[in-house]
Length: 303
Image (cartoon, rainbow, N blue to C red):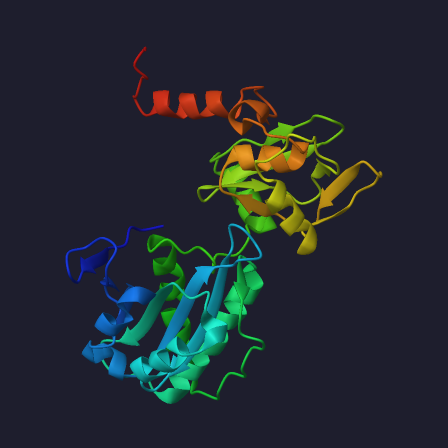
């Protein structure tokens, strides 16, 4: 994949204040601000135009997950002011708005983008979506559909840069196979307490693969990853295993670290850098990472 340039402009020079993001060779523009600075961002001319917007905040019932609302409006700032008075949007802490620099977004374009982004968020399953239903896509000329799909692709690219990965889909079987072919990551295995789990590192995430098993009952001192394990059960990503002692991963599940993944599998606090072992070489995850650094010409300093 070729490199891309994303420019971030801190409007008032503060790293926590409003910012503007632009991708090279894209007519879109992204405006971001904490809800506490809503009065500042709505002063900008761009928010008087047609656009799509995301209202983001932590989900109080699911630790580690965002709660998300996706909308569109002919006048984004007026709609945001309306939402600010809505008690059901109490979760909202950060605002992300997408508009067009060439002013070619119409109401129909906005509705199409809203529908597609909701579809993508639902398919990704990484955030708790407040939108009850997926609105129907409006009829658009073929060329406009192609333009809006490109717009969506840029939205999916820039959001992780801004710290939001909720539109990223879980790694597919194809990505797992391609990762193995490219030798990006060995197959890591974890066996303990009767479990048998496999994982690969894909696109910076530690992914436990479909069919892996996890311990059903954790130890009494278990803290790290326990709430996440319960959440995966609620979402159906962990289900009944072949025996009463085991659970089974029903899909590829991405974790932020090998330690969190190991804790969910083993039902106890665990150092995943030592627990996960490369299937062929027998090297721990930590040893594999060290070898990558040595290959890059970096040698750790002795303490």
